Image (tube, rainbow, N blue to C red; front, side, top):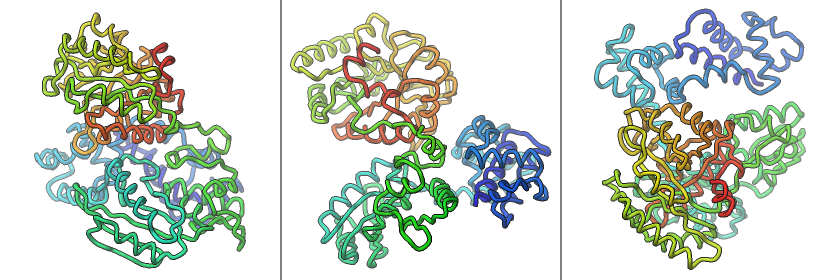
Length: 567
C-alpha cells in the first residue's frame, strides 16, 4: 500500500508551502489529504484502479490527479517544484519536535535562519523568543526537540566507518567456517556519515563466528553475543563506535544483504512491486506463496522483480527504480575508472610529502597522472607559494616528468579568489600550468557568489575547488548561492570540484546530480596533505555514484592525453 507514502508527501508539501510563507486553502487541502490517506483502510492503488479516488470524502479532483500522477510515475511534479525552491537544511528542521513549519518560516524571514546552527544561535541570543507567537516556554520546548534530534543524528564520518569496517572484516575472515562477508546499511550506500556500522555474514557455526567477532582488538564493551547476532562498542580516537554483526543462512544471504543495505524508502517500493506480482520479499528471500524463488544473491532478488541489479549508492527511492524498469539507469562511475587525482598538496606549501613521493604513491595506485595544486601566495597560514616559488616548483615537476614513460605530474595551483574576484596570480604565471583550481579561503560572508562567478570569467581557470566551503563536522560553509555558481559553471564551461576529503565531500550528492543534469563537468581531488589521504578518492567516487555521475561526467576518468587536450 502506498497510502502512507502519499500521506507523507502531502503533509510535507503543506509544510513546505508554509515555510515559503504561503497560506490558505492549498496548505489546508494538502494536510487534510495527508490525514485522510493516513487513516484510509483501503489500498489507494486499488481505489485508483477502480476510478474511485473522488469518491473518498475530502479528496477533490486536484488531489486525485496528484495521487494518480504518483501512482503512475512515482513522483509528484508539484512537490518537486516546491521543495526545490527551499534550502534543503531548512526542510530538515521539520524533523525537530516542537518546531512547526510556521515557526520555521518566521525564523527564516525575520532572523535569517537557514540551518540548525542558525536556529541554535537565535535561541541562545534570545531573538527567537521575541518573535510574535513564540515566547520563552515555546522556545524551551524547541530546545528540547533539538536535543532529541541531535542525539538521533550522531553520526560517524564515512572515512572513519570504512576504516573500522575493513579492520573488523579482516578480523572476521579468520573466524572458523566463515562464509560471505559484507558491510550493510548506510555505509554500503556510501552516505557521507553513518549511524551504527552493520556487517552481514554467513557461517556454518554462527555462535563461533560471533565469539570470534567479540574478540576483535579494541572492543570496549560487548552489548550482545548470541548465535546469529553480535554487537560491540569499539574504542576509537573519536570515542566509542557501535558495530553490529548478523549471521544469516547462506541461501538467504543475497536477500538479507539487499534488505539490510536499504534504504528504507527503496525497500518499501520493492516490497510494493513484489506484492503487485503476487510475491513477498523479505530478508529471508523472495517467495511465491510458500515457495522461495530467489535470495542467494542480490542480483536474482532484483531480477525476479524485472529489475537489473541497482548499485547500493543509488538505493534511495529517488527515481532509480522507475529508470531501471525502463533500462535507463545510469552506468555510474566505477572505482576503477579514476585515472588520477586532480588536487593534492606537497611540501612546497602545507603538505607533508615531496612531489616525488606523491608521484610514487600515485603510480602505486596505477594512476596515469597526479596534479600538484599547492596554495597560492595569499594563503600565508598554509605557506602559500610566491610566484618565484611556483616557477621553481614547475621546473622541478618538468625534471621529474622526464623520468616517467607512462605517468605525468600535472603542474597546478589552488589559486585563491581574492576579495574582488581577481585571482592570486597574474595570467602570465597561470599560463604555465596544466590545471588551475580556484578557491575561496577568506571572507566567507563577503560577496562569495559574485567572487566565484568573476573568477570563472578567467579562461585559465579549470575548476572551482570545494564550491560550498562546508566542513561536515564543524561549519556550514560560505554564504554562497550554489544555484548561481552552477549556472555560471555551465555558461563558462568550467568544472566544479568534488573534494574527496572526508570532512568536505563538497559538492554534495544533491548538487552533483544537478550538475550532471546541467552537463557540468566534475573533477575529483582528495585535497590531501598526507600519504594516507590519497585513499580518500574512494570517498569521492562513492559520493559521485550517489550523485548518479557517470564516467563521461568526470574529468579524471579521462586518460592523460584526453585530459590535457580538452582542459
